[in-house]
Image 1: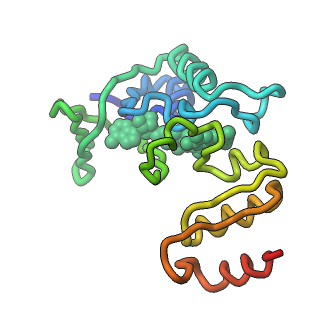
Image 2 (image 1 turned 180 degrees about the vertical axis):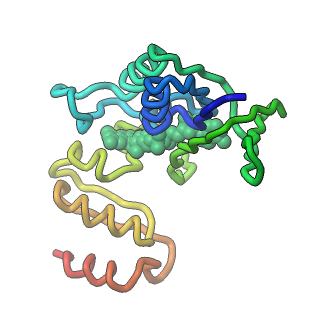
Length: 192
Ligand SMILES: Cc1cc2nc3c(=O)[nH]c(=O)nc-3n(C[C@H](O)[C@H](O)[C@H](O)COP(=O)(O)OP(=O)(O)OC[C@H]3O[C@@H](n4cnc5c(N)ncnc54)[C@H](O)[C@@H]3O)c2cc1C
């Protein structure tokens, strides 16, 4: 039985692993299908402290992995399909139906952007197509930007992007926005 199992190998999972490993808890980290998490999908990461020239996302994740490994993190390739938290120790089921048990569990399974599933979007992801305004907005200074979606997130991201872009156009499917009224009011006040 493990003392700590961590699910997810993104920045959150690897940070948790580093701290657990340095506390002599010999954590087991289950990496999931996207080894290294979302930052492996991008090129330059410019907002991570300690890298004045920026660092490539995959390199940053490789470094985080090595750092966690150095202090005794064990890695398991696999995807978790179920967790049983009603009784202790907790039981974790992997895709191949293997089971592991643990005294403590850290879930750091992150998020997945909802894509449009159009042909070119994977090709241009990180090169003009982005899923994170706060991460990538600064790359698009004085550019004409399009935000797809009509909900709160789209409007919030769109308003944030006005700090950088020459124009921000919201493209949405319905005849009215799904975003909350207050968000809409703020956005329409920004109309030039
Ligand atoms: C293209 C792109 C560019 C970005 N650029 C920046 C940037 O420049 N600066 C910035 O600060 N942020 C950026 N971000 C956002 C940043 O990547 C995320 O905020 C960050 O990765 C979240 O870390 P996380 O560890 O919480 O989750 P994630 O990175 O999402 O990792 C989740 C992990 O959980 C695993 N997992 C999920 N489900 C299971 C399961 N059932 N079983 C096992 N494992 C599972 C996945 O395989 C993955 O390893 C960017 C995101 C994208 C997509």
